[in-house]
Length: 125
Image (cartoon, rainbow, N blue to C red; front, side, top):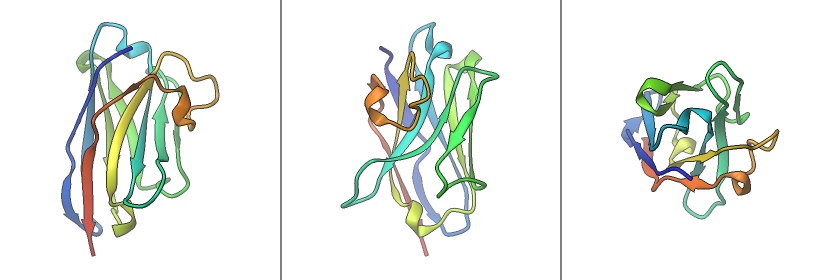
């Protein structure tokens, strides 16, 4: 298990951009699959994106495909979520999560063993 700390949330106008960061602890973080989930008020937690180890695949929810990208810098133990063309519907608390192994279930929150505290993203219209 690793400790995760998110940052980078804030208030932005529709059409704007934000970059979220997720810093992991330990020297094995680079082997973990890392995902982003979000939860808007009154809704269930929703998968946003996932990235496997460096050089591996990344996946996105249909709702963010083409607007969000995820990347990782293993030298900094950090995974990023680059969010462009933000919409009011993107308003939510964003969480990063990590798992040593997910198989193909990267979209399933139950496979992730470590979670960050969340960072609020608010997009105004």
